[in-house]
Length: 420
Image (cartoon, rainbow, N blue to C red):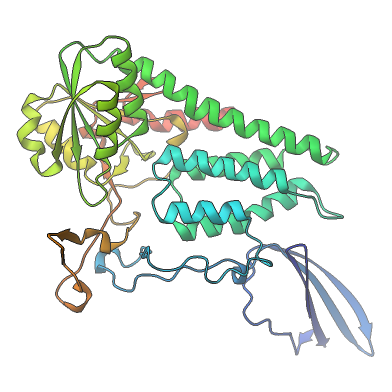
């Protein structure tokens, strides 16, 4: 039998055992256990043992909407999830009974539609959402906040991952929040514990993102000289922050913004820099080899820095780094240390993110090119989000700990683990 109370399921499994051999076990349809704890009571009944198993299920996939995949996949990337923005995300959610917080539902929709984009913006939005969840949280009777709250977050994280795969920076932020929740003493009052958690999240945003950007900007400005022509790719909030700070410090330089389809994020970077008064040139990535002879430095943002020194960033970054290497133009990657991760990757095939292939369709003069491309068996559209750049193509990584080579990432990770 099943009963539901406060978003938790209590399940009773009855199993009659004759001669230590189970002969029956109740079947639970449409229920997938994510995390559970149980206790077993053995009750003798006329020569057999009646085993009563009481399990507390903290999250069920029934309550989490499963996003349907696009259908078509390129064979080399068939192991990756590919979603369509047209697929409804909240159709399967029953609003009165769902375990997902409304703020998390809204954030997931913003992720899936690209309204909240960029590693820093997504991480900050996630941490603010966790703050809303903590503020509305009430500890159930006979439960500990340090255990129950961690389990409460699991379906939320699973839902957000359905909306868009979590970034490395978001994964590190989630680990930090879970660690802080687990460290709450058992005897700590609920209001005091919630206040402590909210303060910890605010400190994480301030130290790991806001102050880190200020520190990186101070280091990076030392590498910008008067008369420099700086190439940037896409729209990195950190790189934009550095260039604006350098302009405020009266450095005389110009910027070449390189962009690529289908997202065309460089337009947003161009808008911000021109609004600041910085002289800019806008080109597409197909023309990068023509303008690189005029470039003195390349500044790139990063999605993550991997343990083997590879830089994971928006697709096209490795191409720009490769061409810059051929022209002997120094490549500087700006990255906060909270984006460092212990994953090892040498290509873009094993682990990546696939965006909606319909984004590659272009509308010109009222006509949609590649319309109904699914009907052409010989044609497949691949919309990769990230690529990885080998450390050989990166001259320097500017972090909040200083300027280091890519090969020093394992050292930083080891120091961070010791500090924690």
